[in-house]
Length: 404
Ligand SMILES: Cc1ncc(COP(=O)(O)O)c(C=O)c1O
Image: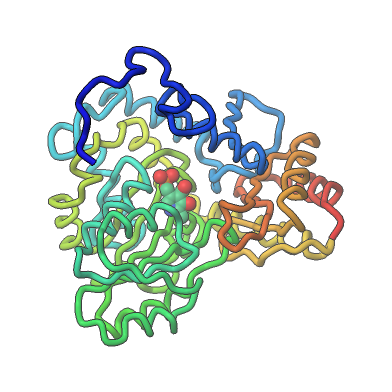
């Protein structure tokens, strides 16, 4: 039907019921948002923000501050000093005015610490994943992606326009099958430690499958940096794969390093290519100097105090052991994330709320955020928790647990 340019009868006023075509009169083009919000309310899936106060008496087992560095005096002083010296913002994109000497220092120290040739800092781990996936693939490429991967890797696959095969979780044979017979440019992408259950990817077997097929491996080490490997050098370092010419890692500066931002680590050839082609690097303002300074201070602290990484893993193992001994269904942690299953979404929400009332903050995952449909509490084992705090957290978790 040709477009009728004459003004509609209801112009300037509310359309009539007949004009809107539905039962209820349409008031704005955003009415559908209210309908979606109502559906969320009906399913009990409304998300709300809960601004936290600067000081709190609650014990935090929900944040990603794995090493307790976000408020470390050296880290906050370095962040403040960087803001004073370089300004509150980076002032431009990295290729224009947004690269400071501090960015370059962080990049070279981060690459050296994790055992890679080069690093590139971006404004978040999310942007780092989008940059790495899109810059390393094109329309004709094949991406093989683990079904449990983080949303930022998934979005990278979508943005790349490459063909993407989603393989069952932590299954190197399935990866190899997908790569069989594909002669083009292939990239296998996986989290090193999966955010929901805290389990680790089988990196040596994935690397072997990639090498047998000439594919590159991209590992999102958001939950591995600072926790896994010698002194927290990350999952690829732990697997003896860091610095190899076919390995690329992404990290966030917002978890173990207690700051903000992200980075891609890999061969100089790859990093130079990202500088020239990665859109989330080129068309984004550089990371704020305070975040760069804070991350650099954390990195230096971690290099000086490698026991922080060991302590985070020990706390995770203690939480798992004691919760299992109490009959709860906890997944054996490979890093600092401990996942404990709940019998239903309602039970998980109630359990988390009861913990909060008792002074303990825990994460609560339920469908649709968990693709397997299993609701769970997600606990993070911080290196700076005292034995007393760990005991207290365990007592609360066990006393408030739903019947199994
Ligand atoms: C596995 C994983 N990758 C990437 C990210 C994104 O990192 P950032 O928060 O720095 O954007 C996160 C964190 O939320 C994550 O858990």
